[in-house]
Amino acid sequence: MKRDTPNFQFPPGKPPRSSLTLQQLYQLAQHFAQEYPISPSKRGRPTRYSEPMILALWLFKQLNQLSYRQLHCQIKSLSETIPNFSTLHYRFDRISADRLAKFNLWVTQQLAEEETSPSASE
Figure 1 (spheres, rainbow, N blue to C red):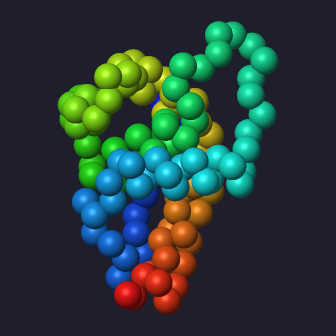
Figure 2 (spheres, rainbow, N blue to C red):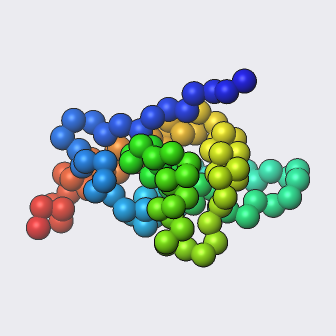
Figure 3 (cartoon, rainbow, N blue to C red):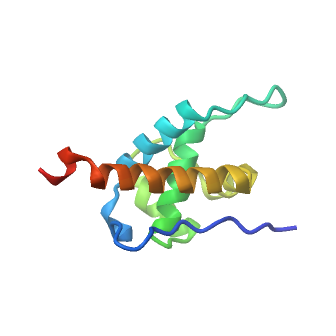
């Protein structure tokens, strides 16, 4: 059974979809993972790609409304070690909808704080 994942949407007045780079999203995902860690699974093979990387890729895919193939083509130019289509799909599907919604809300709040901070206007 396929579940629906939440779509990321900026609140009105926030940056357009293409203004955030994958590197910026990865930094946000790393901070999120530090603030809200999850306990690692004790079953199966260790994951090859970190949760922050998967969250950043998911958000990049959502913001730019990319298919898995388009996402793969865009990230192929950035790094030699990237997940293949099936890994991306599997990992996106394994992140709980609650965690994705929490990440979505957290990123929105972080971007709003950056916009209102005095250093952002300089």
